[in-house]
Structure formats: structure tokens, C-alpha cells
Amino acid sequence: MAKDEQPRPEARKPRGFPDKTAAIIAAERRLVDAISAVYRRWGFDALDTGPFEYVDALGKFLPDTDRPNAGVFALQDDDDQWIALRYDHTAPLARYVAENWATLAKPFRRYAAGPVWRNEKPGPFRFREFIQCDADSVGVAGPAADAEMIAIAAEAMKAAGAKAGEYAVRVNTRLLLDGVMEAAGVEDPATRGIVLRALDKLDRLGTEGVTLLLGKGRKDESGDFTQGAKLKDNQIERFLAFAAARAGTRSETLGRLGNVAGSTKSGAAGVEELAAIDTVLKALGVGEDEVTFDPAIVRGLEYYTGPVFEAELLREFHDADGNPIRFGSVGGGGRYDGLVARFRGEAVPATGFSVGISRLAAALAASEGQAADGPVLVLVLDQAEIADYAAMTSELRKGGIRAEMYLGSSGMRAQMKYADRRGSPAVVIVGGDERAKGIVTIKDLKAGAEAAKAVADNEAWRSERPGQFEAPRGEMVQRIRAIVEAGQ
Image (cartoon, rainbow, N blue to C red; front, side, top):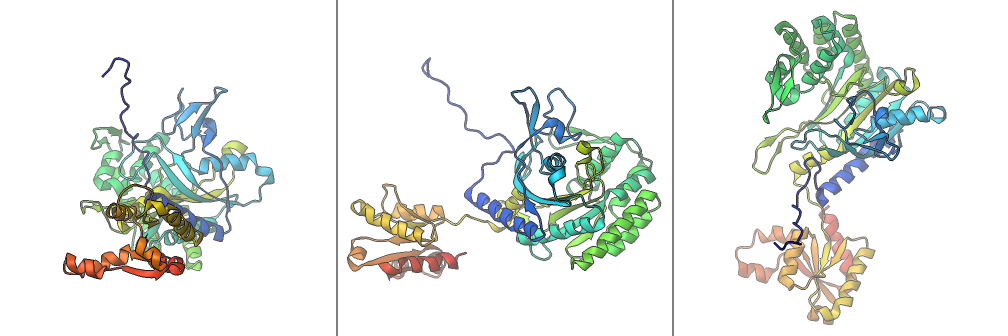
């Protein structure tokens, strides 16, 4: 290397910030559109609060340090105040409501969709930047509002494409958690926080992992150690029994929960709250196969004050090697009556639900092998006729068809290979013979691939040309449209 030659940078991507292919981008857009349509149908209006908030507005859920970027990505503005990228859409909503309280219709019902950022340890399908799609109702108390949000969560999962039996919304309440904390004799707020975070990992770590987190602590696969709650064996057993109280129906689960946590005032209130939610869910036609009561649901953020719930994808997935993957939760929410109160000094009830769009899109792509629909490709076989090929491509686009003219310098075989890699549904072939006859040759690539499976040898394939046909030039758009629509 010459002395004045600069070293080339290494092509590398920061962990947790995925590059998104066309298939994932298309899947995310479809999900945002479908789920936003559910929110609009239930009477919510769109709102975008922007990516940055002042760190103090994000609240007590961030560490109080000189550089408050643990958990978030923070920087100092030109006036030396710390600002941070939003870690969800709910904390900015609380700020917006407090700032515009006098002019808002209450209850204030809004939905939001966009990226959020968390400065956390990434993992498989766990990103530092991801899209969320939220609905929140601010200024309304009572289990009916929570039941409505739970019903919306179930409808959002159906809108996302999950069929009956492929999803479930699991519901708990912090009142029950407070009751079992009281019954177990856990009073220290810090210890309670450790217990909540431990129970929240039951689905991912199992009973053994949560037992360690409730006790001495746990070392993960990377060697990182998480401090435990240091509870006694009888306390751990009580929490595990509580988390396992789920039964076959919502009413049966309520009976079990009454036995485990109903002896305290908070526990009894929690059972009553879930019973009221159950009544409204039945009135809304939300069945037991869609929504269950599950005391193992905790939710990690500490601002929840009442019912909490998670939407779980139950569909079976496999990775590229055929190994089963469990995605688990792809959305969640609950009641948070303390967020707006931080700004206004008075209680403002609120409840909401959020779908993790990026996680759900990755799950569906892994399950369905989704690929973005490629453009119809117009082959260029004669550079002297480039204007004619351009006119044909323009004609297809004016007909509402995604189309591309090949602009490389390769021959027909390479162009066909390019069309295959692009996922093109069809190609348009016009050489001298077609141009003289006023026709186009169209090759339906998907139909051709299916038909080719039944062709015995290459000679038969060349003679039969499966999926290939001729059409008058004036019928090109119509015939191509039929191919595209058949493949959708």
C-alpha cells in the first residue's frame, strides 16, 4: 500500500439495525396499512410526534446518569439539553397530551406508526430499530376501555393475516401482581421490579431460568450475569404457582387466581377487574380461542398500572435449517394511568396497544417465504430499437403494471436469468419477427416453471415452451395484467 493511500473501511453493519430487503419493506407496509385500518375503524385518528424527545420527558424509566443513554440513544442538542430517540410511541403521546390538554377532545383516541429505537442487546429477531403501530385511548377509565383495547388487539392480529388458532391475546392485571407480591411478603420496590422482569421472561427462559432470576441470579449464554431477586424458596414457589394458574377458559382461570392471589385486597380487586373485562369481551363477540387470561403475562415497562396483555403468534416457524422457531409475543399493551400525570400533577387514565411491526413482518416472512413481486421485464434484443422497447414499457406502466426495460448489455439468456432473480412474473419478448407481425411474445414465468415440472426432457421443453405464447401488440397490457393478477 502506498504511503498516501487511505485504508479502505470495512463493510460492516452495526448489530440490531437490519438492512431491509424489498420483501420485508413490502410486508411492513402491508401490516401498517392493515392494522392502521383496524384502528381507524374503531374511531382512532393518526398522530406522529416525531423521533426525538427531551430525556426528562421520557421519564423515570431511564437511568439517572450524566449521559442518559442506557436503554436509549441520546445526544446533546445545541442548547446542551439531552434529547433521545423515542423508545416507544406512548411516552411521547403522554407529553403531547399534556402539552395540548386544553384543546383535545377527551377521551383522546390516536394511533401512530413508525420506527422506535432501543439501546439494548440485540438478538435473533430482536432489533435496536424497529417499527411499532400503536393505538391509545387517553382520558377514559374502567375495564370496558381495557376490554375494547384487547378486542382491538385480537382484530389487529386477524388483519395481519393470522388465522384462527394461529394467535392468542393473553391478559393479566397489575392488581393481581400486587396481590401476590403482598401475599409473598415482597415490599421493596427494587425487588418487586426484579420479580416483574423475571416473570416477564417465563415464556422465553422457562421455569428453570425464572427460578434463577427470582433467586440468586442467572448467567446467560454469553456469560453476562443478571442479578436475581434473592427470594426464599417458599416465595419463589408462590410466584411460580401464580404464573401457572392459567386454565382452559377465562372463567376457570379466574377461579384459580382467586385461590392463589385473591386473599389480599389488591388480588381480589384484580380478579374482579378481569371478570368485568370478560363480560365486555363476550358482548363484543371475542371468543376464548382469541383471548385468554394468563397470570404469566407481566410486560416489562414499569408504567403499567392495571390490565396488561400480549398478542402472541402461535404459528409454527422453521429457520433455514429446518429448526423450529418460536416468535412468541408480537404485540402488547395495557393500562398506564401515571404517564400524563407526570406532566399535569393529576391522574389521567389511559390504555393502549402496540404491534411490533418489524418483528411480525420477520415472523410472517420466515413462515411464508415471502418475496416482493418483481417487475414485468421487457427484454431488449436490438439496441437499435431501444425507443420501441421504452414505449412498450411505458405502455405497461400506464396500464398500472410494474414494469422495467432491461438496460444492461447482456444477451437474451442473461436477461432471462436477471428476470428470474428479480422475481418477475412475466417477460415481454420482441425481436424482428414479432415486430414485423405486430405481435409480442409473452412468457409467464411462474406458470412456465410449474408446467416445466411435467416436461420429461430438454428437447420437449424447447419444443413446447411451457408458459410462453404470442399476442397482438394491442393486447399486451391486457394479457400481462391477467398474469400479474393471477399471481397476487
